[in-house]
Amino acid sequence: MPTQAGTALDAILTQHARQPTELLQILREVQEVAGWIPPALQTRIAGHLGLPRARVEGVVGFYSFLHDTPAGEYRVLFSDNITDRMLGNQGLFEAFCQRLWLERGKCSEDGLVSADYTSCTGLCDQGPALLVNGRAIPRLDAVRLDSIASLILERRPVADWPVELFEIQDNVRRAGPLLADTPANGEALRATLARGAEATLTEIEHAGLRGRGGAGFPTARKWQACRDAPGPERYVVCNADEGEPGTFKDRVLLTRQADRVFEGMTVAARLVGARQGFLYLRGEYRYMLDALEAALARRRAEGLLGRDILGEPGFDFDIAIHLGAGAYVCGEESALIESLEGKRGIPRNRPPFPVTHGYLQRPTVVNNVETFACAARIAAQGAERFRADGSPRSSGTKLLSVSGDCARPGIYEVPFGIPVHEVLAECGAENTLAVQVGGPSGTCIDASEFGRRLAFEDLATAGAFMIFDARRDMFEVARNFVQFFAHESCGFCTPCRVGTSMQMHLMDKIAKGNGTQGDLVELGQLDRALQMAAHCGLGHTACNPVLDTLKRFRPAYERRLKALHFRPAFDLDGALAEARRMTGRDDAGAHLETRHD
Ligand code: SF4
Image (cartoon, rainbow, N blue to C red; front, side, top):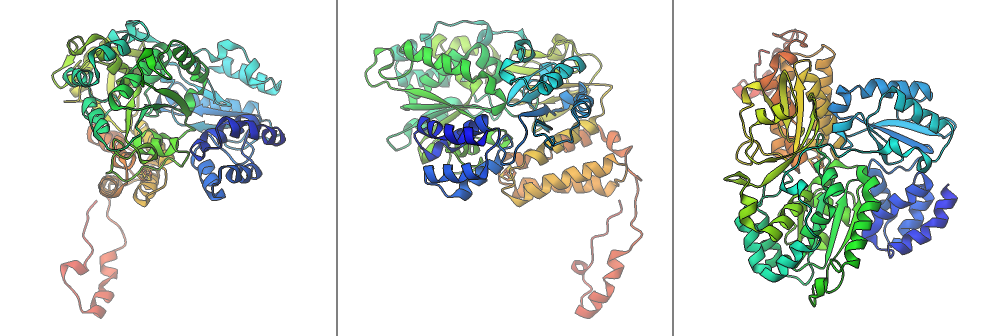
């Protein structure tokens, strides 16, 4: 296989014009041929791109889907979101490893197969799920897993596996104007050209469109800032790296409404003056790539992308798709831009913000998939129709990814401002104990808060809506999220790298029955440290699941503690008396704070 990849390398490099910004794409494609990225190929790639070898090695090491040691002809990664666990993924994983004589994370001795866990694959409505050589298989059960094991033992190429194994359902349970409409291609662009760029920007402002990625920044303000920024080149980037566990609405939007998303990007390009756009697609959605490329090709043929779009002289814009490679932090916009530039996805210092210093340090608009789809709708239909749904400060509809304990998991397009209990009733949830709104970095609420509304003015969300009924142990839910953050911390800054790991160890200690009240206090202190010193949002929100569940479900923690009240047998402050005497100090600062846990 490495020889084959060596031969293919020239073609891959040529296809990517030997551009260093294409490094991640080149590495990904080399791995698709070779199964891994051998050190010798890394050296060759570095030479061809004129990059230090350490840069190539750093990129390979950063992304969890790239590997520099053989991982087998078949690399099987089980999705390990909490909803996968609730559906029994761990038992399935054990059975799979037993059937194939595998040890977690290690390649079989004959080099055939390896199995491990990966973070949420965006299939929570049809889990448990896995990826085999990057292709997603949902709805695992013992029978399907047995077929997969047999296909591997037969050494049948994944491309020849039965197609029904890979069939992914949209599970749209409630469609609104965004999902139910089937607008004519080019409708939004024609309306934009007729109205003019300034007036369309004003229309988006009047619509009150706010970013659907969770933060809710006004879209028109972001686009205006990019438009006003100095410089000859601008870029439009669609963030389809939906890695927040429990979120899968972009998956469905890109499957059902890809044209609308691309049209929204093209509208944005017209308004800010960009000629190049990128769709950054998460690696877990690799299976969508061919269909999305085909949609782009069709749009070029229809005059909706390329030069002189719709016959308008000088309206040039095209879109390239970049695939991620398994790094949650790349969902953060500046990390995503670094990744687009072919680097490790480490968040940048901000300011300056991407609207003035984004891709290649040029003005760049980065928005979520749903935001672009909404912008296309506003451009085509106007602000008034958009504002007909929603609440005063959150206009329009919102796509929710509903998963967990309910009869009808899937996608719900709801008006912003809908109370949580209405969503629960609609999806058939019973005896609900808690809902995690917005994924692990969002908010966990209990039954007393089900009257709260999903809107930027109350419960802001990018769309994840995970339901836990009375059978669930909220400590274990939080522990899964804590493991997720520790795994996904990019390691760039010490507070987050060490803090997320300490948090995980504290939760493991409590899970084993060795925790004390002091550990609960320490969990709170960790949050303060991360809030103060972490470099990006991942670190700032990494303690949210613990804090939220401690506040609402404290008994789930306390019943695991060794003792509710604990006094250390060893008097540390007393032991320091000699040191105080030698330094001549006996003030308060020379004593350890007394803490009765
Ligand atoms: Fe990386 Fe965490 Fe620091 Fe963000 S806070 S830069 S994810 S280590």
